[in-house]
Figure 1 (tube, one colour):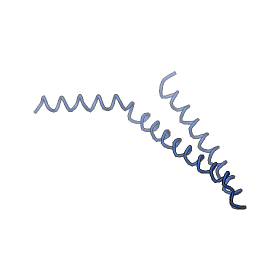
Figure 2 (cartoon, rainbow, N blue to C red):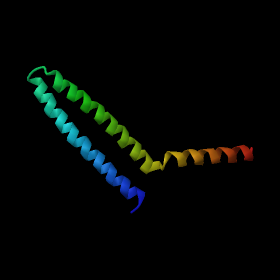
Figure 3 (cartoon, rainbow, N blue to C red):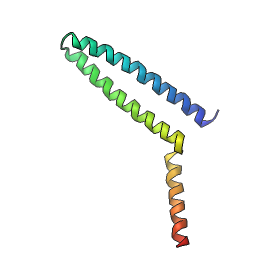
Figure 4 (cartoon, rainbow, N blue to C red):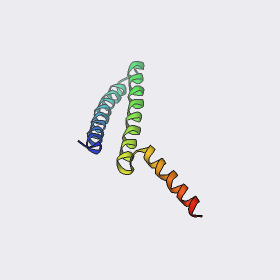
Length: 88
């Protein structure tokens, strides 16, 4: 199994978790609309933070799938830079 196949499954897992947490957050907001509850508000805040982290992970994984591993991109850019300096 290739890294891309493994990553795609991970991407699907991230999407699934985002969907589940978003639905749960919607339920919490509906319950909060019924009245102020500090515990529910704290749970919403924790969900928001987790969703932010998942979206960051999602974006990073998509970039990796599209352009490759960060370290390899940097190594390639440095090699090109050295070639340009030697050609000048």
